[in-house]
Structure formats: structure tokens, C-alpha cells
Length: 315
Image 1 (cartoon, rainbow, N blue to C red):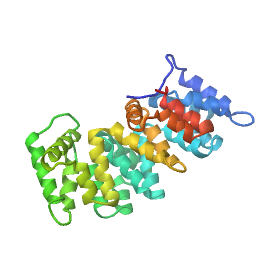
Image 2 (image 1 turned 60 degrees about the vertical axis):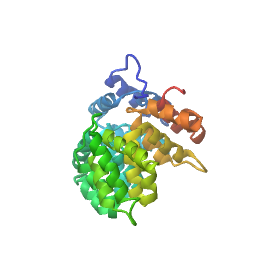
Image 3 (image 1 turned 180 degrees about the horizontal axis):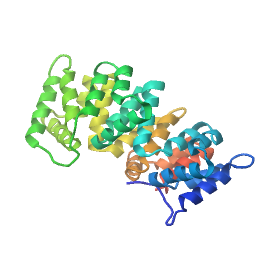
Image 4 (image 1 turned 120 degrees about the vertical axis):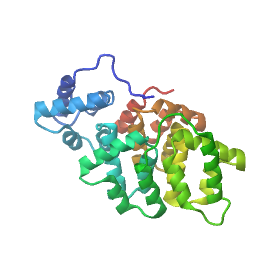
């Protein structure tokens, strides 16, 4: 469920383009006006505004935003302007190749649905002229590389159907491959985690719990490490409850001294049009504080105003 608040009768993309142009003109930029328009337009509307802006002013709106805004606000707004697949492509290119922030890249890949990943791969190639597989191949290593490559290439079902016998068998196989033996048979984990649908993996988790007295997640924590472990945990948690997973990522980004703004921006911007309502509910349940309040206390200025506009009402 999206938290995006779109006005009942939104302005035409042409009117929006004119308003933006006016906000940029003159001395200094009317940043509040820019935020008020862009934070309340969905992906289709944002794309139309970009077309209109280019047609009317022979200038790319993203370039203009980039020169008018700065810092964290600029990062957040520019990311927001893309459609979801284009945005994921931009984030992955940045995290895999430029920043080598492999945990962020892993989060994006391992939390997306199979249909999203198929489309993402096409967009990635058309944007950057290189295959996503190729960038994963070059910038990751070991079992982490293997799970990412398997995860983006295996066709998985998205429906709720579950094969009980397979789930029980998978639970036994994973136990044998992990906790039962000395060392871990990573190949088995990679195969099951990349080939099973979310519903199927969930069923396996509950069999695992019933048979061995603790969760599959705990087994993964005990048996694996590093980015490989993070990938498996992300897959398992998103199979079960993606909103709870993202509430945790957000909490981690804001707890302690300082804020991991790139994680905060990435999650708020990528989930606003998908499941932010649910993430807010999970956040409140787990941390006894609303997500809006947390973001409010960790950010300031126009950057804060933009994130809060995307999050919608404080509830």
C-alpha cells in the first residue's frame, strides 16, 4: 500500500512544468514549491511532467533539479523522479560499481519480486549498456556473487501456492546442509533460496521451526557470514514480511549517532509507492514510535519536508 498523497484533481503536467520553471527562476530556488509539486505526483505523472518540461523549455528537468538543489535533498528528489525499475537500476549501478556498497545492492536485489527483477534487468541494460549480471560478476565474489546471480536469473512463482512435501523435504535438506554437518554446504542454500517462491520458502521455514525447534533465519545466522548471510536473510525475511524487513532497515539507518541518509532515502523513496503503509505499521509495532517521528528527529530543513511528504500522515 502506497502512502503517496496525490491531490484529488492534480494539475496538468503542463501546469506543473510551468510552476516548476517559475520556482527555478529568479534569485534562488523556491524549494518548497518544488517539493509541494513533486512529492505529490505518482510515477506516471512525474514522467509526463518531465516530457512537458523538455518540450516547453528544451531542457532536461533532472539536470535542472540537479543544479537547483543540493546535498541530501537533491539525492532524494532525483531518485524519486524515476519510475520504480529505472530507480532500482540507478541505485544498483551506484551501489555495485561506484560506491561498492554491497549490502545496499543486496537489499535491492533480494527484496524484489521475480517480475520486478526481470524488468529491472532490461532497464539496466538499456540505461548503462551493460548487463546487470556483468556488473554483479565484476564487483562481488564467492557465495555472495553466486546467490545474487542465481536470484536474478531463476524464474520463481509469485502466487500463494505451496507444495507441502517439497517444503518439508527442503527443510530437511537445509538442516543436513547446515546445522547437522561440520561446515556448511552453501550450494544447497543457494539453490533452495533462489529457486523457491516466497510462499514456498515460508512454508519451509515453518517446517524447519517445527522439526528443529528454531527458525531457519537463526540457522542462516549461525551457519553463514558476511554479505552471503545478508542476502539469505533478506530473501527469507522478505518472503515472510517485507514491511517488517524494511522497518528494520530504516531503524538501523537512524539509530545511534548520525544517520545513514543513503539508506533512509533509498527505502523511503523506493517503498513509498509500494508498501509504505505497512512499513509504518510494522515500525510503530516494533519500535514504539511512528516512522514519521523518527524521520523528523533525524533530519531537517527541506530534506525533512520532502521525506515526510512522501511518508504521508503521521499515524
